[in-house]
Length: 302
Length: 302
Image 1 (tube, each protein chain N blue to C red):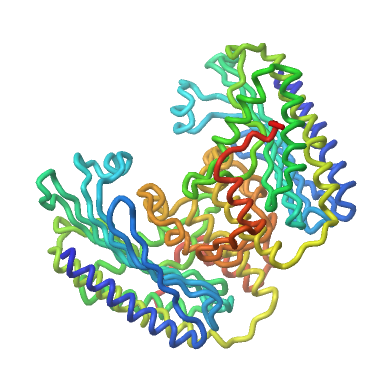
Image 2: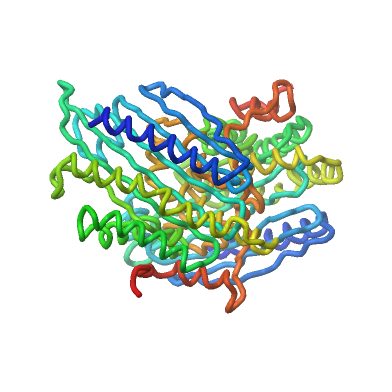
């Protein structure tokens, strides 16, 4: 499975970056191979100042070694020999009418003293962070999520949509980071599917990423915007930074396991503003976004 | 002491904001009174888009109530009735040649069931975060710190300078946030001084803030700078955000005790950039800063 999923994420990285370059029309992904001192490494692919994408990364990492003690406690394991691999992507478009997107698909193995697998699971998800609310876009994103889920289990969409809303919650602001999508973790053989069925599900979600996101980009990328839209985007990006640095477990895991800083923090937006006590005008599109982020919405209904 | 220090921080807030307005020449501090649902409140004073200061806050808070359980465990107390007051300031100048500065002076009381004080202590400090290295400025800042320390205890400067270097360390980058200053905490009656002697020391450091910082601002604020300097400042401000959101105990304390978000996060810079894998040219002034931040320096020597 380690080999199978490793191969899958490499091929997904290729497919996603070449499609994104095609849509961008101008930018090219810069490839950086890196090694992790404790074991393993990865390939970071970053696009900056493209035609559509102001900044983005589509990164693969495959790391192994011994978990730091804090992580061993957290996972309640004795030995802490591990292997982890995954693909992680974040795209920050230039045009404030195009949403930011994030996706991550990962696989984890834990070993005993004799190097036998004692646990193995998948995790990941996909979620959208718009700066302006276009119901058409958000519904398309969620419908794509639902249809890939439904092909595997009729309970998955509702369950993982809710987990996503719960996970990407900026508790200190009492609002969602974005409009959600799917979030799943610890998908292991004791959870009603075999490891191979979980593989099928997770890779199906991975395969659906471009279908979920690209039509939205294509529809909005050439829509004109003004300085006020751009300022709002930069301010909202601040909330994205706050979530990633204060709450995001993936970021904290990376920092604790001495991951490659520049690959982990590639998720941070290119230009961000923090203004004091911003409050959008009543009835404005900006206020509408704030309202939408206050309570999770069922985007499939009607 | 509660009353005495409360009065002191109010007066220090007035003195500091009026001097900063005078130096700024254009901006005015906007005053916001706020109340904390659990007890107490404060006054936030924010300056934005001034002549010298792009963003800054000089905030007083006086809060009381019951500590959340996590804080009770952290402080190893049973009851957790507390009072805390302090002044906290951060200034982000527009000109990249003028350093960012941070200062904080606080006082804490803990009570038993009968509302008797069971513990009381001061904490705080003052530290400088330049974007370009002017030894003259950094030495002036540290000499001011040392001279106020020496008047109270000949060991203080060395001790609190080192604590400052240790505290403002971005572990995930393996570099200092800035060039340090003073950092002290748990200054209580068991630590070789009476509560009243600690008060004298902490307020002396508070009184020295303008002497430590204003001459630097005056010397640099009108020096011309270019887009490259500005870009470097915005990138380095990203490290400031990383420290405050990932490591800073004051920020985390504020978020955990349901402090006022906009007052806590006033410390974040107005405009910030994250670029992938930035590395300044060899021999450049930007590289010089990076070198200076790699190992704490004795700024008093020679």
